[in-house]
Structure formats: structure tokens, C-alpha cells
Length: 280
Image (tube, rainbow, N blue to C red; front, side, top):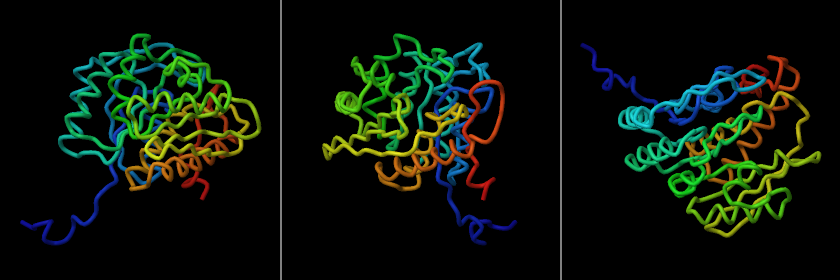
């Protein structure tokens, strides 16, 4: 029988990314958006599903959470065999699931983690139970390489009002005190022709502003999921935190621009994850 290793067939490895998040049946957000992003950016994607949602471009009609034990078993199955160069965490739903995720990541000493503290869907539907907010701060923020809240999420996590740039900086500093390596406050909820996110790197006590044009489109479903999974993909590929965020911002800007000319569904359509491949 042929020895595959000796013939040199095993000469490549993948950049491996695991998403721990909820499923979006419409394919625009959640693990579906994460997997599309990983693939578009040259990474091998894996999943640990925390919840199933029945949703489309107009809203979420039902949610079924996985048991914490099953979420943990998925994480163990993937990390014990394949491993991960980076992990993206999205919708978690409950405090018990959050604790299970933290347990799994600690057990395998995962080093590159992007935490997107998903609380509300694009449609306004709640995706996180009230008692889970404190659990995120206690169990997951300290493990994170980058935490990526939008302004409303940052306000909840820091118990501050965050409707201006100075508040974004204050929120970033406050959230960083829980032990993460970086905080990215996303400015998508503000008005203006430009969107300026704030990246705080506490080790250097440095604030970085990352700006781009605000894209006028209703096709923005999954924007946050896509951005955070893009950051994870670039971290998996060896980029620094700041460069991973900058490249992810460029990617989502292109995905929004390309999606603007499409129509899918009757509400907020998805961003165009494959624009670099399909429109090339």
C-alpha cells in the first residue's frame, strides 16, 4: 500500500478558524456568514452552533438554543482533533452557554479569540438573555484578543451612554479593564458620510481611528458577524491585531459596496461575502 506521507502528498496545511455562534436560516449572518467569510479569506471554517434561529431578511421568528453540554461537546470535538488558529464567538444566548464556551476554550488554551457580543439582530430582535450580559464580561472578555461591540452593545457592557466619539473611547477603556487585548468600538450606528471605528490597544495605551465611507445600502444584514469573522481570519493568517482589523474593515467595506446592487428578500439583504471572487 502506498505511503502518502513518504510520497510528499501531505505538504499543505490550512489556516483554521472556528466560529462559535448561532445559525441564521437565511444565510446572511451567524455561522453562515462566518463560514462564507472564512472561505473568502482563505481559511478553513468549522462550527460550534449555540442556537438555531428561524429568520429571514425581515426578522427572527423563533430561536432554539442548544444545551450548554452540546455546545461544549462541539468545541471539544473540533479542537481535540483539528485545532484552531483563531476562534470567533458570536451569538451565545444564555449565561450557561457562555460558561460552557469559556470552559472549552480554556481547556484547549486557545490564544486568538474574537468576541462579537451579539445582543440584538439587525431587525431589532433580542438574541441574548438579560442575565448573560454579566457572564460575557466575567467569563469571555478576559479571554478575548479583540472584543468588537457596536455602540449600543458597548453602552450595555460598560453601563455608559455611547453616542459620540469621546464616549466610544471611554467605553473602550472601560471594557478593556476586564482583561482583553484590544477593543474595537464600531461606529455603524452614528450618522455622517464617514464611519470611524475606534480600536483601543491597552498594552500600548493607544487609540487608533479607522475610517471609511458610510455605504448607503439596505443590504447590511450580517455586517457585524462578517467583520468579526474577517478579523479572526486575518489573525489566523498571522496578522497583528491592528492589521487584522484594518484588513477586515477593507473587506467589509467592499462587501457592502458590492451588495448594494443586489436584491435578496424583502428586508435587509446580506453583504456580498464573495465579491472578490465573483466580481474579479
